[in-house]
Length: 159
View 1 (cartoon, rainbow, N blue to C red):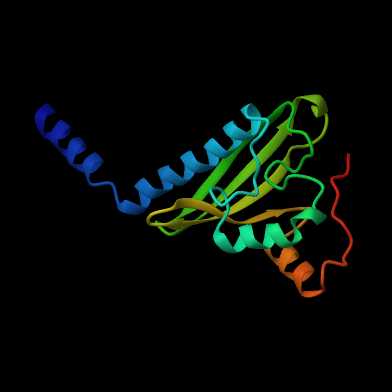
View 2: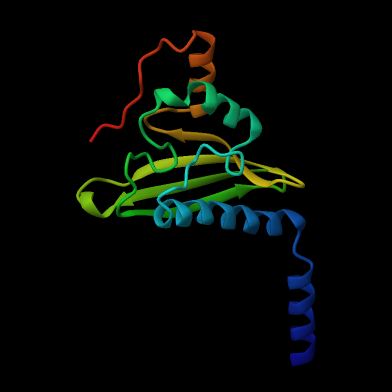
């Protein structure tokens, strides 16, 4: 009986669907972003290693209007902690929902951020969009800003 159970358990664990394995990769990508964000002062979200090509191009054209980092919803990441609340999707796209907290502001409720992720076979997981209460879609906001020539109001982080 024991051997059958072990053999069955082994067969099930080896037969993980590709999507489940890819979601583990997506979780690792998101966790890595926030580890780098809190440990490397030179880390920037606006990088082709982090963002899809389309979102990266938009940040290069209109990102100067943001005076905060949309990944942490902050200007300074001192005391930042991020919790991945949920991650869902498939082997090509995923949605990561996070709660962000700051040690200095323990009384404030955590900020909710959603990362829309895309997976490319050779490039791995990339951020396709960032959604928050401040900007429901960073991608749409940057596209709109580009269409109107960049003369819109700056988006600032409120204390």
